[in-house]
Length: 233
Image (cartoon, rainbow, N blue to C red; front, side, top):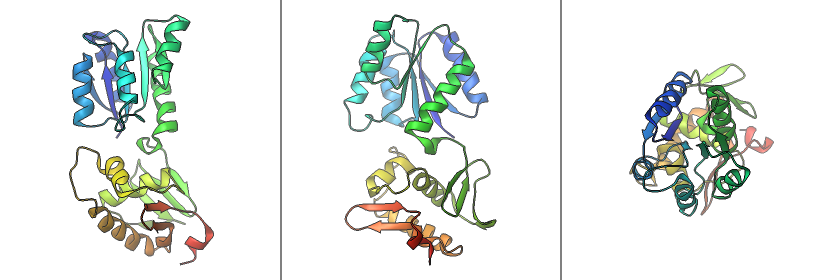
């Protein structure tokens, strides 16, 4: 379930957005100020932020710039949601680092569509769409993994790990990156624990001759490949 942080100081609007997001299957956290938003981001990094411009203490634009300047939050998906509709305002919001810009009054259906579009671009593992790489099919909705109809039994952690790798194929991910993106940066475990879960994932995939799709890149980390050589095991 994707975590959405809604930063909005008008309680009626915040509640409207929250209700619609929860009905759409998202986990929602509300913040009514820049200070509260920063606290929530420091506590648990969300999958996306819906950010108002006019906030108590610090503007949403300034907060977006602050997040873009930090290594931890520079890739954090941000949608500005504001009554400031002038072209110059839109340019300023996008230049500050927003991935999209929605003006008030707004359609909740359009906002949901824009949230899904940004997540598809920047955090595809946060969506519930089925993913197919090579012979493997992973369905987050049913939490099933299969090859040619043969189901692969995975634990919750190995499922999340495979989901992330399948939504970012052919890319090398370090242990620290996997720890942040799969476990969450609020979880404190040893990086070497990643190796244990990769081993378990390979053992499960071995039953459908897909273990070699998970490659170890020495000195760098792990990646999932769909090259034919990895499917000949």
